[in-house]
Length: 259
Image 1 (tube, one colour):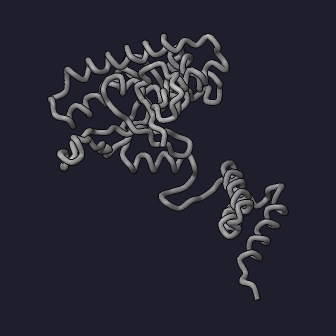
Image 2 (cartoon, helix red, strand yellow):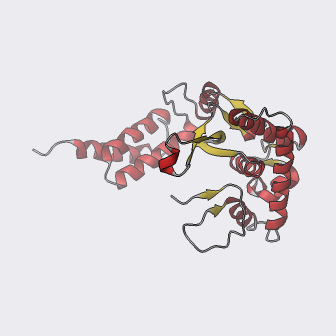
């Protein structure tokens, strides 16, 4: 797995495949498709300045313990980004290309879930807080990580383990702190399923259909047929129903043992 450099330190120009990926540089390269003049160093300086402000806010409220510091930093980053600076999800212009460009995010204070999560992660790293990205269907959350010294530090050379906090941060919703139940409810609203029982609606059924086709092409006919049957149940009047039924029949035939 290629390591990711949250802080985006350095120029990001190394050709060494083992070097950390400069996420900020990647974001600027994407933005340059629409804005060729997007300035990496200017954007890097803006991120660093936001991180410094968050670190200063956290320093005034942290009691000194590791867990207290993580909580204080997490709260401070959200405070600076959403309460002071006014960053928010691009609800009214969700699919605009500008919602994916980090230079425009810094200007308009609106962006997609993934881009807001990236900015939040970069600012947190600049403030001294590590966040893990938790990508779920239709949404990206962040999870604070606390450094814990390994018990066998003598043998591991003082290695540090990262322990995930029991809550998630939702950058698209003003840094809201979410429990697992809140995340589940948000996914249910987005994808139309309560709890662990998947209930497809017509808008998302085609994604399941396409996955079913792919599984058939990979020779996993039984799994593909199961997904295609879910698609037919969710979209019984779909124009491609005859073709899908052919795949389902073929999948059933492939499951029958040879005589």
